[in-house]
Image (cartoon, rainbow, N blue to C red; front, side, top):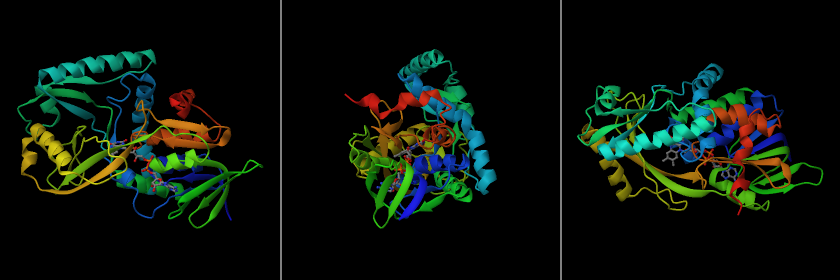
Length: 373
Ligand SMILES: Cc1cc2nc3c(=O)[nH]c(=O)nc-3n(C[C@H](O)[C@H](O)[C@H](O)COP(=O)(O)OP(=O)(O)OC[C@H]3O[C@@H](n4cnc5c(N)ncnc54)[C@H](O)[C@@H]3O)c2cc1C
């Protein structure tokens, strides 16, 4: 039998960034398990935005949480680079969302006003501006805008990263600080013991730990159900498309189009209810490619070389779930969308919360219990 002070199930970006926070806090022997050696498609195959804009409409608590994460991002990236030598390719250039036509731009102005008011109620700023077409074009002077683009919304206080390098850096930092990572160790059974410890049976081993963190993405629902609780998440597919490399011209990422540091354009804004089916579909690709070409007509001349689908972990109100499970004070579950944007808080705030050293009173509002009927 193997032992750990804290066992984290799921080595995607959520489990890995939380595990990093635990070893940074000196939490003893922290072991991170994952089911598969290579896949982890969701944490590797996302859009890479480190974003707060538009998050938390109608949910000021989530707006606040997203804003805190964005504020923490530059230092988080710097810390990872110093610890590991990895450049996670953070571009802190701001981020924008395009509008087609005046009615959509007016709608943006209204929704920005509503979120700003909500943010005021929890005492935070919401530094988002509405830009007319000329101002929007000035953000990306080397790109020509399609005729229908009327402007958009923009904030200078967010950016984008390379999700592959981010996951690599976080895992590297975790292991450098003494954390242990075991791949191909899918957790099959969780058995709380009378003495307060927990046994976790994996496909090939048994682990005994004092605390357990379940951060297994869609795999968490089954593990939590075995402890008598329903985890309130549902799957939503997104599809992404990538071009061949080109000279870098687009320095500000848009919600639906960004250009990476190596010159590829990525597009993707599709949302489909498809259960756990990660296949791509011609319809979704055509539709999002058409939108990208309406924003930047020149993208229609590029070769699109790859596409994939990945399944978002969504909650009914869009906010994250950080929760202890039932009477098991030493078992927590973390389940959420926007694991890239929120990574600094998983290292800096969720890890101390797991250790019982809560420094952020806000975390209790993200319990799984808020969705119980
Ligand atoms: C198209 C698309 C674009 C996105 N763009 C962005 C973006 O721009 N910015 C952003 O912040 N977020 C974005 N996201 C969301 C982001 O990708 C996710 O929030 C994040 O990857 C979730 O990470 P996770 O670690 O919680 O889950 P996962 O990445 O799913 O990791 C869970 C891990 O648990 C493992 N696992 C499962 N079951 C078990 C088990 N029984 N035992 C052991 N291990 C197990 C899995 O193998 C997996 O590695 C996007 C998502 C999609 C689909």
